[in-house]
Amino acid sequence: QSVLTQPPSASGTPGQRVTISCSGSSSNIGNNPVNWYQQFPRTAPTLLMYGNNQRPSGVPERFSGSKSGTSASLAIGGLQSEDEADYYCAAWDDRLNAYVFGAGTKVTVL
Amino acid sequence: VHLVESGGGLVRPGGSLRLSCVASGFTLGPYWVSWVRQAPGRGLEWVANINQDGSEKFFVDSVKGRFTISRDNAKNSVYLQMNSLSAEDTAVYYCARAIGISSCLWGQGTLVTVSS
Image 1 (tube, each protein chain N blue to C red):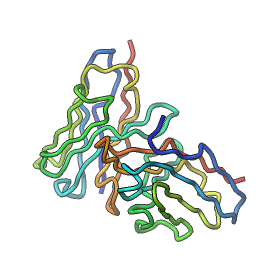
Image 2: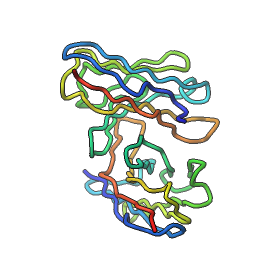
Image 3: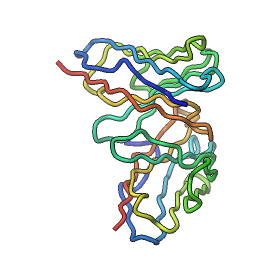
Image 4: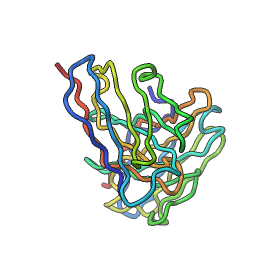
């Protein structure tokens, strides 16, 4: 059971907007920035979003992040076939003194 | 600019392994470094991290007392010593620089298999 809760899957057709939710608590999302990672099969993860809504250099503008209270979300606006991957949210947890990940959301492009 | 993990392999239950994470093309010293693992077919699990001078270290509950993390900035390296290994520790182990800020960088991972 992950500390952060994500839906196991999400899907959309090319060009659609897809949103992935990440629910936590006051000790993690409620008090610390949320980061998102993208992982393609058989490859290492990469940082997709940091500090709730900051894109690292090279990440397309169609990716956006937000946070409200103890929940966060990642949106992919204008879904593309190359966005098919697993997406993980993460945040530091002050109560556990640990960095916690969600279980991951598999995005499928229909 | 790379992080390269090594030291993985097959180990019997109860055994030990020492993983290394070596930085290439940059100086690792200014960064927090984390170890994150991924069991076959499963999600990411943060294992441990260490601050720039090694004075602060944190571990996930499941490895406390069994794993230690250390670094040698002169060798541009971070290490994960894993003792009392069990099947539940079987995973690809990644090291990551600055896991939550823009300069985040992940290695390619090293596979640890615990089996008799």
